[in-house]
Length: 582
Image (tube, rainbow, N blue to C red):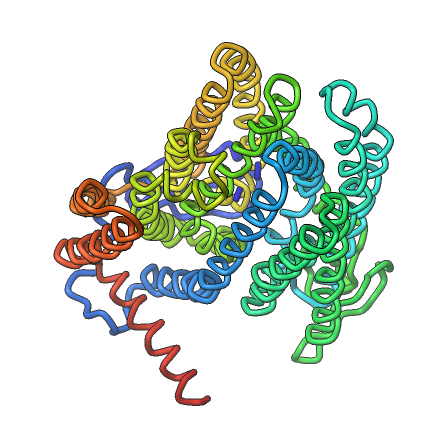
């Protein structure tokens, strides 16, 4: 789903010798049976007896291996930093929940989520960076794309920040909040442009596949600085406003550092003029491509047209998706208590830990999927979706079951006030499990130029949410709100899969997806048994350690595909070479 939304007239009709013409691309596209196989994994096993480290001769297999290596390398480097990020985020939340009353933390959480509501809407203009940067023909086109995106995002962020600052007193009155809410909300309103700047800079790093700088900035630098701001604001000042000021300040500082790195190491600059001759490596003056005229000169107006045309549906759709993700906080402000806001925020933080495998893999799925789509590698893209979604499922199952079994222990980390709400944590985990099970469906919709279909899907789901969430919240309180959250994510991802299959004949599932579900049985049995037989810290320690060991052993017995063996061998060889050089 991480995460955003010219639908092609071609539905990739099947046939062994069929050739479909995509009206929006203007060139023939081969259509293969593999891309249309809804349940089987015949192409997955078609690589036969190939050994784990040998290179495939099939060009589809070669493209698949290259795409998987790029994404898996990004995930391998990213997952440890994401673990650090999640741990630091949990620590930041725990500092605030233990340093302030649950109601006071709820004020902070709701105010920040209202800022994030506008943040995510503004970031609808960001996704074009991952779509177009991997295919930029020159440094001038790259700079032009970043300039266009920066101007759009900066303008929208400033307008939203001013509006939120001026509207803060009215929002406080409508939500019947205390004066502290107005002050914290205004701090976050002033910091909105800095926060958008941070996410824009990191998206440029993602589009350029700069793995290490991306993780240092977004996954390590910002959460560390945020935790420091939280500790100082809580321990030294004992003031939530000081915490909010610190969070906003470190957003701008990390954004400045990421931008400085791009300028120094990648020569990134602003591009505000069109008539600039581009000299390529062979001494010629550019190529006649989108964004360049027949003389090889960059046409900035064409870049603007392409970028805005692509991102406008994503920006509009971002309103719908943001309502889905964060629209629950206005309902909390209107109908529930500050404590409910804190509980919901904690549930979202813990639930996001289950999402870790998808987040790690998604770090570089956008540029890789965009390149496969741009070059019409349909079979490789279909196989890529099968393998990545299965790898995500393996990780998600291993994380979800321990969190569900030991939910009381997990919630106790945030203070005793949150333990009675532990049953609600099951809902957050199941919602994320359903979202992760379908893999990178939202990204694939965007990277295959189906952003308008993405918009329609999310508007429809938002209407369903508006109809169901309010009565469920009024009738059942916080449990009803959590039920709405589960319903929203389930419907959203299910419908996105159906739409992606309709237009692109891409879907995530194969029969091999059943292996992690089978392996989940011993994991669940061992975890529950340890909880019943042991007490204290020994129960989760033994249950998780032995349970995950049994889970891994079961997966090993069930076996892995040749593509997965080749991926493991390639990554191992890559990192051995790195260690040898160092």
